[in-house]
Image: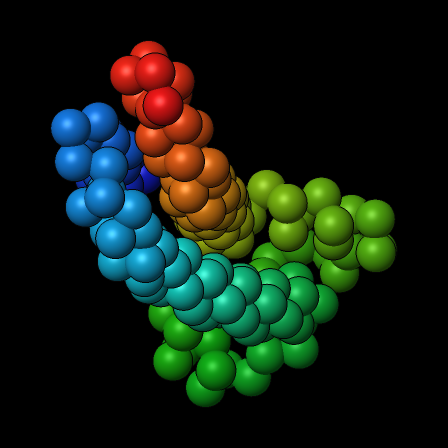
Length: 145
């Protein structure tokens, strides 16, 4: 699920019907479970992408140092590296500019944004008890109780 879909869900779920505060209060655990599931899915996705990033980075490091066999290169569909073996600082720059690694890193950053957004939503869901309690107290005050 992408960030736009999550935000659309939250736009619907964030509404508190002040005419049915008792029902809204009972919905808090269900909302929490819904967004907790989304959070866990996003965290799993982050773990998978991070592992993939590290595996490809290790392969790319071997590639740029010329340590992959012809069979490994063929299996990966890569041509042999034609330049001089880079020193550590050069390798870091080469890896930072590698398209495949950059693509995975961008996906990791986007999943982190999803995680932060869902965590903020869960925080708001946890605050609903206080919001609903305050709304009830206000209604009591207005009605003179």
